[in-house]
Image (cartoon, rainbow, N blue to C red; front, side):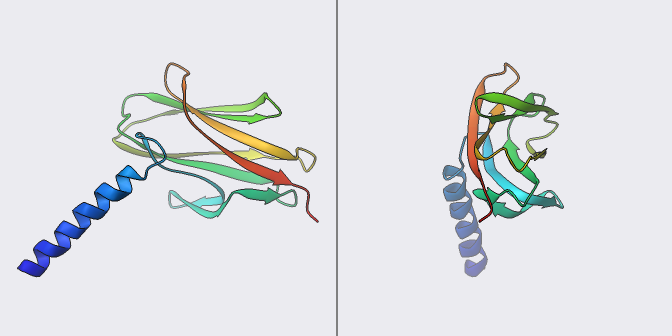
Length: 131
């Protein structure tokens, strides 16, 4: 019985630690990835070479049920795409993707906006020329 209580205590402590490590109070995970399978980002990247033409941005949204969020893809200070999502539960995993031209090199940003179109999180990746 004591072993079970110890395991439960460890799980509670690890949950609290991981929640404090979230990138934002309403986003427990935000990643660029080469694919999303079973609502999980795979092949997570921070930099991508231009032999790849498609990238995904995944966000695990928490406690925004009933609201709308948006992914805004930005390159060279120009909005290249905006994708809206309705958040229908306390934990809602969403992702958008962007097809990239090989000449669109440099820094890309995806902003996550709330229903008032206010940016509450953003993340960057670098699209580089294949050597």
